Picture 1 (cartoon, rainbow, N blue to C red):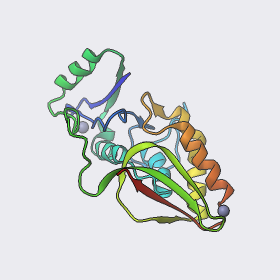
Picture 2: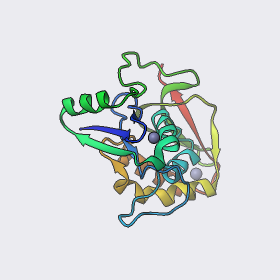
Picture 3: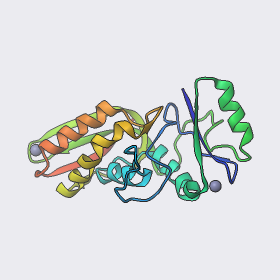
Length: 197
Ligand SMILES: [Zn+2]
Ligand SMILES: [Zn+2]
């Protein structure tokens, strides 16, 4: 499946993010309020904030947020097709090519790395390394507070109906992250990115 998001008003395509990470979450709104529409879809901003609360700062989602902030109120729309030609046509229609769409080189920009996400509980000396490689913010280990665990846990059950086609993140992996976090909620929790060497 190919998913492309375009702003009709500005004739601009949203970024197609590295590899299969071309999907996104929620409605095209940067609002961080928990305010679902009639079909239970929440704003992109609200869902992404909960992922970032536990240190999941995914390059694709951050790029996509830029698009949502700029075009969310413009009647931007998403087109889904299994035909590669449809994607090409959509890209041709857009005056401005989506960043990364014809990038052969998948080296992340400065400040970002290919890596995997690891949670650890320092109280129990347990770790959980999660899912396939993605491009994450290159950063030091970060602690996770009980309030941040709660923020993530609140959003977790909403994600399945808020993913658009290609999932930017694996639901199964996110569910495992949720279980680990809730189990160790009141302990000394943290996350870090393990670089892919
Ligand atoms: Zn626009
Ligand atoms: Zn623990």
